[in-house]
Image (cartoon, rainbow, N blue to C red):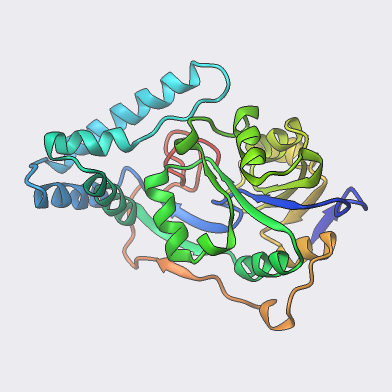
Amino acid sequence: MTAEKNSNGAAGLQTLFFDLYGTLVDIRTGEDSPAAFAALAEACAAFGCAWQPEVLRGAYAELTGWLLAEAAARPGFPEPDFSFFFAGLLGSEATTQRVARLAWVFRQASTQKCRLYPGAAAFLQAARRAGLRCALLSNAQSLYTRPELEQLGLLPLLDPVVLSSEIGWRKPGRRFFAAGLAAAGTAPANALMVGNDGLCDIAGGRGAGLRTACFHTETSPAADTARTTRADFWFDGADFAGLAARIGVTLEAETKTEKGATIWQPSINKPSARAGGPGRSSNGSGTCC
Protein backbone atom coordinates (compact mmCIF):
# COMPACT_ATOMS: atom_id res chain seq x y z
CA MET A 1 0.00 0.00 0.00
CA THR A 2 1.36 3.44 -0.85
CA ALA A 3 0.35 6.97 -0.06
CA GLU A 4 1.33 9.79 -2.39
CA LYS A 5 1.51 13.50 -1.81
CA ASN A 6 3.10 14.95 -4.92
CA SER A 7 1.89 14.16 -8.42
CA ASN A 8 4.95 15.76 -10.04
CA GLY A 9 7.65 13.95 -8.06
CA ALA A 10 9.48 12.65 -11.14
CA ALA A 11 9.86 15.99 -12.91
CA GLY A 12 13.51 16.93 -13.36
CA LEU A 13 14.89 13.94 -11.50
CA GLN A 14 18.49 13.07 -12.32
CA THR A 15 19.77 11.32 -9.19
CA LEU A 16 18.28 8.89 -6.71
CA PHE A 17 20.04 8.85 -3.35
CA PHE A 18 19.43 5.74 -1.26
CA ASP A 19 19.89 4.99 2.38
CA LEU A 20 21.26 1.47 2.88
CA TYR A 21 20.14 -0.35 6.02
CA GLY A 22 16.36 -0.59 6.30
CA THR A 23 15.94 0.74 2.75
CA LEU A 24 17.95 -1.42 0.33
CA VAL A 25 19.17 -3.97 2.87
CA ASP A 26 17.30 -5.87 5.57
CA ILE A 27 19.76 -6.45 8.41
CA ARG A 28 19.81 -7.63 12.03
CA THR A 29 22.90 -7.39 14.20
CA GLY A 30 23.90 -8.07 17.79
CA GLU A 31 27.10 -6.16 18.45
CA ASP A 32 27.18 -7.15 22.13
CA SER A 33 26.94 -10.85 21.34
CA PRO A 34 29.51 -12.99 23.22
CA ALA A 35 29.98 -15.03 20.03
CA ALA A 36 31.10 -11.92 18.16
CA PHE A 37 33.82 -11.11 20.67
CA ALA A 38 34.93 -14.75 20.82
CA ALA A 39 35.43 -14.64 17.05
CA LEU A 40 37.28 -11.33 17.34
CA ALA A 41 39.59 -12.74 20.03
CA GLU A 42 40.39 -15.71 17.80
CA ALA A 43 41.18 -13.39 14.87
CA CYS A 44 43.46 -11.28 17.07
CA ALA A 45 45.28 -14.45 18.21
CA ALA A 46 45.99 -15.33 14.59
CA PHE A 47 47.98 -12.08 14.40
CA GLY A 48 49.86 -12.82 17.63
CA CYS A 49 47.75 -10.59 19.90
CA ALA A 50 46.09 -12.27 22.88
CA TRP A 51 42.79 -10.85 24.14
CA GLN A 52 40.02 -12.33 26.27
CA PRO A 53 36.53 -11.99 24.72
CA GLU A 54 35.07 -10.28 27.80
CA VAL A 55 37.89 -7.74 27.83
CA LEU A 56 37.22 -6.99 24.16
CA ARG A 57 33.52 -6.66 24.85
CA GLY A 58 34.08 -4.11 27.61
CA ALA A 59 36.67 -2.17 25.62
CA TYR A 60 34.42 -2.00 22.56
CA ALA A 61 31.47 -0.70 24.58
CA GLU A 62 33.65 1.87 26.36
CA LEU A 63 35.48 3.20 23.31
CA THR A 64 32.55 3.31 20.90
CA GLY A 65 30.36 4.83 23.59
CA TRP A 66 32.94 7.55 24.17
CA LEU A 67 33.35 8.21 20.44
CA LEU A 68 29.59 8.53 19.96
CA ALA A 69 29.17 10.79 23.00
CA GLU A 70 32.06 13.00 21.92
CA ALA A 71 30.60 13.30 18.40
CA ALA A 72 27.13 14.08 19.77
CA ALA A 73 28.55 16.95 21.81
CA ARG A 74 29.86 18.71 18.69
CA PRO A 75 27.69 20.63 16.20
CA GLY A 76 27.03 19.62 12.61
CA PHE A 77 26.46 15.87 13.16
CA PRO A 78 30.06 14.57 13.03
CA GLU A 79 30.62 10.82 12.63
CA PRO A 80 33.38 8.84 14.40
CA ASP A 81 35.44 6.11 12.77
CA PHE A 82 35.47 2.82 14.70
CA SER A 83 38.58 1.55 12.89
CA PHE A 84 40.64 2.97 15.78
CA PHE A 85 39.27 0.23 18.04
CA PHE A 86 40.43 -2.58 15.77
CA ALA A 87 43.80 -0.94 15.10
CA GLY A 88 44.37 -0.58 18.83
CA LEU A 89 43.92 -4.31 19.37
CA LEU A 90 46.92 -5.03 17.17
CA GLY A 91 49.22 -2.23 18.34
CA SER A 92 52.47 -2.28 16.41
CA GLU A 93 51.23 -5.29 14.42
CA ALA A 94 48.44 -3.24 12.83
CA THR A 95 48.25 -2.88 9.06
CA THR A 96 45.39 -1.63 6.92
CA GLN A 97 44.65 -5.18 5.77
CA ARG A 98 44.75 -6.66 9.27
CA VAL A 99 42.49 -3.97 10.70
CA ALA A 100 39.99 -4.59 7.88
CA ARG A 101 40.17 -8.33 8.57
CA LEU A 102 39.40 -7.92 12.28
CA ALA A 103 36.49 -5.59 11.59
CA TRP A 104 35.00 -7.94 9.01
CA VAL A 105 35.35 -11.01 11.28
CA PHE A 106 33.54 -9.08 14.02
CA ARG A 107 30.84 -7.86 11.66
CA GLN A 108 30.15 -11.31 10.28
CA ALA A 109 30.00 -12.88 13.73
CA SER A 110 27.61 -10.21 15.02
CA THR A 111 25.26 -10.31 12.04
CA GLN A 112 22.19 -12.51 12.11
CA LYS A 113 20.71 -11.50 8.78
CA CYS A 114 21.84 -9.34 5.88
CA ARG A 115 19.96 -9.45 2.59
CA LEU A 116 18.65 -7.22 -0.13
CA TYR A 117 14.99 -6.37 0.10
CA PRO A 118 13.08 -8.09 -2.71
CA GLY A 119 13.17 -5.98 -5.85
CA ALA A 120 16.04 -3.73 -4.77
CA ALA A 121 18.61 -4.83 -7.36
CA ALA A 122 16.04 -4.97 -10.15
CA PHE A 123 14.90 -1.43 -9.36
CA LEU A 124 18.45 -0.06 -9.36
CA GLN A 125 19.14 -1.73 -12.71
CA ALA A 126 15.92 -0.38 -14.20
CA ALA A 127 16.53 3.14 -12.88
CA ARG A 128 20.01 3.16 -14.39
CA ARG A 129 18.62 1.98 -17.72
CA ALA A 130 16.18 4.88 -17.54
CA GLY A 131 19.11 7.30 -17.28
CA LEU A 132 18.90 7.99 -13.55
CA ARG A 133 21.99 8.01 -11.39
CA CYS A 134 21.69 5.80 -8.30
CA ALA A 135 23.90 6.74 -5.36
CA LEU A 136 24.29 5.69 -1.74
CA LEU A 137 24.16 8.03 1.26
CA SER A 138 24.60 5.97 4.42
CA ASN A 139 25.46 6.54 8.05
CA ALA A 140 27.82 3.58 8.25
CA GLN A 141 31.21 2.30 9.25
CA SER A 142 33.24 1.71 6.11
CA LEU A 143 35.00 -1.42 7.38
CA TYR A 144 31.62 -3.10 7.85
CA THR A 145 29.69 -1.67 4.94
CA ARG A 146 32.00 -1.84 1.95
CA PRO A 147 32.43 -5.64 2.23
CA GLU A 148 28.65 -5.99 2.57
CA LEU A 149 28.08 -3.87 -0.54
CA GLU A 150 30.47 -6.12 -2.44
CA GLN A 151 28.87 -9.34 -1.18
CA LEU A 152 25.39 -8.07 -2.03
CA GLY A 153 26.42 -7.05 -5.54
CA LEU A 154 25.52 -3.40 -4.96
CA LEU A 155 28.83 -1.74 -5.80
CA PRO A 156 28.27 -1.81 -9.60
CA LEU A 157 24.79 -0.34 -9.11
CA LEU A 158 25.58 2.61 -6.82
CA ASP A 159 27.83 5.51 -7.76
CA PRO A 160 28.93 7.38 -5.78
CA VAL A 161 28.98 5.58 -2.43
CA VAL A 162 29.15 8.14 0.38
CA LEU A 163 29.66 6.73 3.89
CA SER A 164 29.63 8.83 7.03
CA SER A 165 32.72 7.28 8.63
CA GLU A 166 34.75 8.11 5.52
CA ILE A 167 33.83 11.79 5.33
CA GLY A 168 33.45 12.49 9.05
CA TRP A 169 29.84 13.73 8.88
CA ARG A 170 26.51 11.96 9.03
CA LYS A 171 22.86 12.42 8.21
CA PRO A 172 20.80 14.47 8.93
CA GLY A 173 23.55 17.08 8.79
CA ARG A 174 23.72 19.37 5.78
CA ARG A 175 27.46 18.80 5.39
CA PHE A 176 26.81 15.13 4.70
CA PHE A 177 24.16 15.86 2.07
CA ALA A 178 26.35 18.55 0.51
CA ALA A 179 29.14 15.99 0.16
CA GLY A 180 26.74 13.56 -1.51
CA LEU A 181 25.40 16.13 -3.92
CA ALA A 182 28.92 17.22 -4.84
CA ALA A 183 30.07 13.63 -5.38
CA ALA A 184 27.10 12.93 -7.63
CA GLY A 185 27.39 16.25 -9.45
CA THR A 186 23.72 17.04 -9.06
CA ALA A 187 21.64 19.90 -7.69
CA PRO A 188 19.23 19.37 -4.77
CA ALA A 189 16.23 20.14 -6.98
CA ASN A 190 17.18 17.25 -9.28
CA ALA A 191 17.58 14.62 -6.54
CA LEU A 192 15.32 12.31 -4.56
CA MET A 193 16.37 10.87 -1.18
CA VAL A 194 14.92 7.41 -0.50
CA GLY A 195 15.17 6.20 3.09
CA ASN A 196 13.42 4.66 6.06
CA ASP A 197 14.31 7.13 8.82
CA GLY A 198 12.21 10.21 9.42
CA LEU A 199 15.00 12.29 10.94
CA CYS A 200 18.08 11.25 8.99
CA ASP A 201 16.57 10.63 5.57
CA ILE A 202 13.33 12.60 5.36
CA ALA A 203 13.95 15.66 7.55
CA GLY A 204 17.63 15.67 6.60
CA GLY A 205 16.90 15.36 2.91
CA ARG A 206 14.22 18.04 2.99
CA GLY A 207 16.54 20.35 4.91
CA ALA A 208 19.12 19.95 2.16
CA GLY A 209 16.55 20.80 -0.53
CA LEU A 210 15.95 17.27 -1.85
CA ARG A 211 12.65 15.62 -2.58
CA THR A 212 12.12 12.59 -0.36
CA ALA A 213 10.53 9.14 -0.41
CA CYS A 214 9.97 7.12 2.75
CA PHE A 215 10.07 3.32 2.88
CA HIS A 216 8.44 2.66 6.24
CA THR A 217 10.07 -0.67 7.03
CA GLU A 218 10.27 -2.76 10.19
CA THR A 219 13.46 -0.98 11.26
CA SER A 220 12.02 2.52 10.92
CA PRO A 221 12.03 4.28 14.33
CA ALA A 222 8.65 3.88 16.00
CA ALA A 223 8.35 7.58 16.83
CA ASP A 224 8.99 8.70 13.25
CA THR A 225 5.41 8.96 11.97
CA ALA A 226 5.20 12.76 12.00
CA ARG A 227 8.46 13.14 10.10
CA THR A 228 7.97 10.33 7.58
CA THR A 229 4.53 11.53 6.52
CA ARG A 230 6.14 14.79 5.38
CA ALA A 231 7.93 12.88 2.62
CA ASP A 232 6.87 13.53 -0.97
CA PHE A 233 6.14 9.82 -1.28
CA TRP A 234 5.36 7.37 1.50
CA PHE A 235 5.40 3.59 1.08
CA ASP A 236 4.44 0.80 3.45
CA GLY A 237 7.63 -1.26 3.37
CA ALA A 238 10.45 -1.39 0.85
CA ASP A 239 8.07 -1.00 -2.07
CA PHE A 240 10.34 -0.71 -5.10
CA ALA A 241 7.51 -1.43 -7.52
CA GLY A 242 5.52 1.41 -5.99
CA LEU A 243 8.46 3.79 -6.20
CA ALA A 244 9.08 2.80 -9.81
CA ALA A 245 5.48 3.58 -10.69
CA ARG A 246 5.60 6.99 -8.99
CA ILE A 247 8.78 8.18 -10.75
CA GLY A 248 8.21 6.59 -14.13
CA VAL A 249 10.75 3.74 -14.02
CA THR A 250 9.72 0.61 -15.91
CA LEU A 251 10.48 -2.71 -14.22
CA GLU A 252 10.80 -5.91 -16.22
CA ALA A 253 7.87 -8.18 -15.47
CA GLU A 254 9.95 -11.13 -14.29
CA THR A 255 11.76 -9.05 -11.67
CA LYS A 256 8.67 -8.00 -9.76
CA THR A 257 8.78 -11.16 -7.64
CA GLU A 258 12.57 -11.17 -7.23
CA LYS A 259 13.75 -12.66 -3.96
CA GLY A 260 16.18 -10.92 -1.65
CA ALA A 261 19.76 -12.19 -1.74
CA THR A 262 20.98 -13.42 1.64
CA ILE A 263 24.65 -13.15 2.59
CA TRP A 264 24.33 -14.96 5.90
CA GLN A 265 21.50 -15.89 8.21
CA PRO A 266 22.75 -18.17 11.00
CA SER A 267 20.38 -20.74 12.42
CA ILE A 268 21.65 -20.14 15.96
CA ASN A 269 20.06 -17.45 18.10
CA LYS A 270 22.49 -14.77 19.16
CA PRO A 271 21.63 -12.69 22.24
CA SER A 272 20.82 -9.01 22.27
CA ALA A 273 20.19 -8.60 18.55
CA ARG A 274 19.14 -5.12 17.61
CA ALA A 275 17.45 -3.74 14.55
CA GLY A 276 18.75 -0.19 14.61
CA GLY A 277 18.00 1.97 17.63
CA PRO A 278 20.27 3.89 19.96
CA GLY A 279 23.72 2.81 21.07
CA ARG A 280 24.43 -0.03 18.64
CA SER A 281 22.55 0.30 15.40
CA SER A 282 22.72 -2.04 12.43
CA ASN A 283 25.18 0.23 10.69
CA GLY A 284 27.66 0.02 13.53
CA SER A 285 27.62 3.78 13.98
CA GLY A 286 25.02 4.12 16.69
CA THR A 287 23.13 6.47 14.40
CA CYS A 288 20.32 6.34 11.90
CA CYS A 289 21.58 4.71 8.76
